[in-house]
Image (cartoon, rainbow, N blue to C red; front, side, top):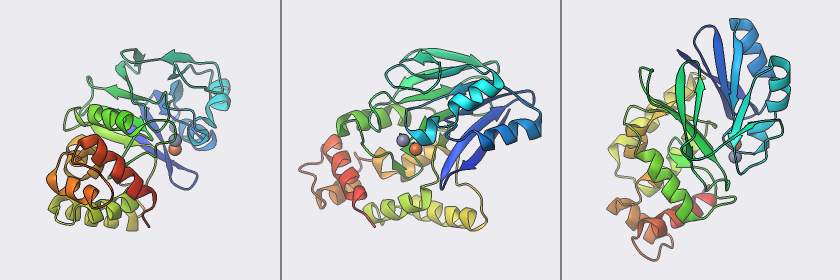
Length: 256
Ligand code: ZN
Ligand code: FE
């Protein structure tokens, strides 16, 4: 099974998973890069998965679905601009011989879902849209801090080796913020250096892994004393993890 991060717009990745014959694409905000990849590798599009309704995630769905006669799955509580099979917590999607579990992760949008494939791969795969980024998390457009914190905790509980396929290359900016939160985190410093090298070479920093995110991502580390202390210096009323999360998110929103 091969996993490709197709760049789109300024900093999106459209994830394409294929077995040499059939492909699945996640969040095709643009049709063109996906169509080009399918044609150049001689792949049949077996399905399109959507995590949430934002235009940079659904903009190419209708054209791709029509051109390739491909079925679409998307969040039951959101609008997807093409005929689609609605999915919710606990549903599964079978594609390429894999079983993808649907996990509801509200916060960035109210109905946001993630797709997780745990079996039949060298390492599990997570397509998390704009919920979890490497070193960061999505902005709270429609959800509450408590919802987003709970969503991120669910993703953090997935197996260590899970490959985290985020929809944006925001890693370096996120790690600058993470370093402001946890200047003493050695794993974070080492990872930031490795990511700088990758970006300088024009390579994606993704996918990440759940083990790495647990070690370096402040939004998954709200229970750590150093993270809580930093959040309390930036407006958190207490060390309660949701309070810490909310303060970090507000701090990051204004961080330059
Ligand atoms: Zn989004
Ligand atoms: Fe996005």
